Amino acid sequence: MSVIVVAALYKFAKLPDYRELQSGLLDFCVAQGLNGTILLASEGINGTVAGTREAIDALIAFLRTDKRLADIDHKESYSEKMPFDRMKVRLKKEIVTLGVAGVDPNEKVGRYVNAEDWNALIADPDVILIDTRNGYEYDIGTFQGAVDPHTSTFRQFPDYVKKNLDPARHKKIAMFCTGGIRCEKASSFMLEQGFEEVYHLRGGILKYLETVPAEQSKWQGECFVFDQRISVGQGLVVGTHEQCYGCRHPVSPDDKASAEYQIGISCPHCFDSLSEKTRARVTERQKQNELALKRGQAHIGVTQKRTGQSEG
Image (cartoon, rainbow, N blue to C red; front, side):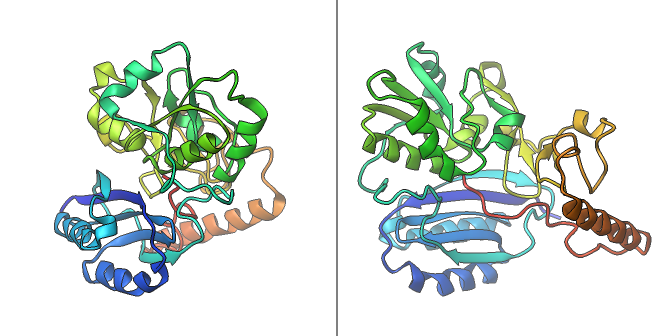
């Protein structure tokens, strides 16, 4: 089988007709044999899709026929197998959910920093480097010196800022996320809060890992991705993590060696906190999966390793 191209794409653009775009975009993707999820909202488009080289190229060309998306960018990585089960195009209020009215990167946004210039920026001792991703993403990899906001959803980021950062004292803020979309929206929010020097990594961690040589990299660990590869490393090679069915936290090889790791059920991150209801559900699912494997079948749901859409 040919190598599958995985494309992460987004663009903030004014799309008041986004509802009318849904069916045509879905039909096009299905016709190309693409799988993944694309979100549409009045503020733009966000998604991760996978398919052949020709299918990905056709999708980008199709999107660029809309002049509002003519300069849409995307990041590519690769997988030996299809990392998504089906194709979805969904309508949303926001293409990445911050939950704060009036924040619009189409109107106001921080300063973009290219991957090749990122190391110099974060070496500045006056810069506060903030990882805008969720805690389970931070846990398996981040930039040297990055602050963990201890959030479980992007919606919690505004509260973190209001409680921990002050425009009068924190003059230079640099932020990053997986593909660039969260930190771009976060930069718009922070400008609204009165912060003046706000920087964000163009193309996110994925562009950095693709662009910056390993010997120069300030990245530590692996980068969580929202598909069945779970994580990628330097050069965007598939990482070493899997995912716990009990709590959805990424599971490292060391985690799997722990006595608290039970395949398909729990891991060290949830062993002591998993509810009895969840434990019973995942235990039964694992039992059915093992029975299906003995029969030479794949139990339904076994390849669906996570819920939700990439926040980017």
